[in-house]
Amino acid sequence: MSGSRSTPRIITPPVRATARPRHWVKFFLTGLLLWACTVLVTFFTDNSNLVPTIVLLGSFLVPASVVIWAYERYAADLGPGLIFTCFGIGGVIGVLGASVLESYLLSPSAWMYVGVGLIEEAVKLAALVLVCRRLRVGGQLGGLRYGLVLGATVGAGFAAFESAGYAFNAVLSIQGLSLDDLVETEILRGVLAPVGHILWTAIIGGVLFRERRGGRFRCTAPVLLTYLGVSLLHALWDSTSGIAVWLVARTTTSDFQRALFDLGYMPNPSTEQVHLYTVYDTAGLLVVSLGGLLWLRLLVRREPGAPIPAQSPSAPA
Image 1 (cartoon, helix red, strand yellow):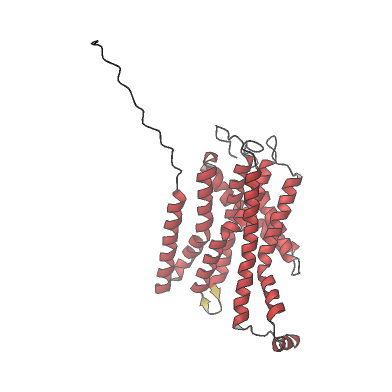
Image 2 (image 1 turned 135 degrees about the vertical axis):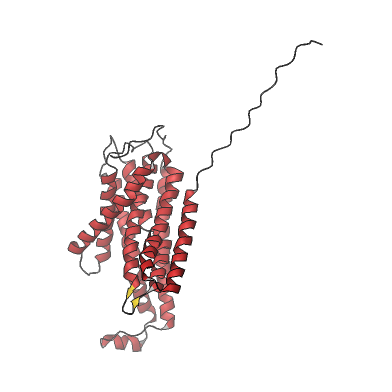
């Protein structure tokens, strides 16, 4: 046998796929714990100075968690600066614009919620365009993906600031501060936030960025039809309570209640009617939510795979 030694084989260990960060889970659980502790301390101490903390934590927790999840999973190369800008500035611009336009353009009518949907979706879309006008992505370069994330971020900012206003109104009552109403309002709006403003603005944002060409946003037919569609979803969402009342009145009103109403008195609803209203209202919200989620799924599945640019896109100054 030869005295030469064979070259040792170098075995390279397999490279493990990098796990996606899940900071949103820690953020959500930590925020939820802090919110619950603040509620309990306020309940036992009657310290009204803690109410703003409850309002802010409860209003921003879910929208911010959704944004962090979307950013980590789908658009980490955008950078946190643009995400913060879309959430903060985009959300405030949307709330301010909606408040001004609704005050001057809307009046109580059967079509009021249609006007609310058109106005609020328009101001969120305008805020998205304003904040992202210098971002160099769109069209076939990941336009849909970036648009979905950035649209959802603007919608989350809008939802957070709007929820803070509703929570502030809920805590004020004739008897003083109502902690029960505040907690109930924040839980309800937190649960519904991902399938409301966040979902609607994500859809219109995805189509807007997909239709972008040459660094310019375009008002094409798909963008216009998507805007009208999400505005209709918004209007139906806001109308579910009124539709539920109408359905209960049409199906369960007794002759005595009808006679009182004809005389100008508002009859007290029965326990059965209250439960039936809750069922109708919840079912309406579920139908609208599923419609939006189905639309989002179809939008993503019909989009052909597009290459994501290797370099980070330029964020607005």
